[in-house]
Image (tube, rainbow, N blue to C red):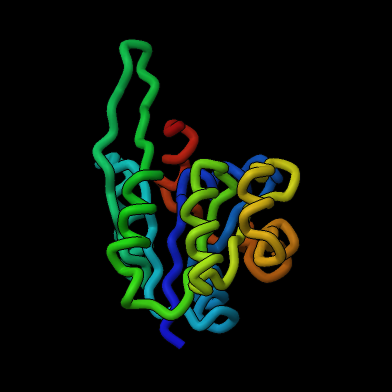
Length: 174
């Protein structure tokens, strides 16, 4: 199998933070490769230069980074919405992968998920948490949705492991 994963990084990180734990990104990429036969993992995020060390770490453990320029409002709020980029990439690569793994809880992806499902190209939607997952996403993923909060024992970062200095980047994006 030649499956691809498409990760809405902001949604993943904030969803897990709200549950009170942190994902070990290296464990996540191993899990995706072993469980879902993923050969390419896209990580979609707004680019902030202060997070360069985190981006380098992710790339070093096997993620393909897709950055979107961010905008900063007059109040200092940073916005880096990557939804359109993720959908476009899934369609650009449509003929290159057997199945897609979509990681998000955002209802904006329901049409992509539905299309992949109908074309038998959806392996699974991994949502950080059932409670915060969009009803539209659940509806269109049907039986192919699973919740990452159930994987805490496999994917949680060891609290003793050094926190990357810039790992807090997602708290500032919306």
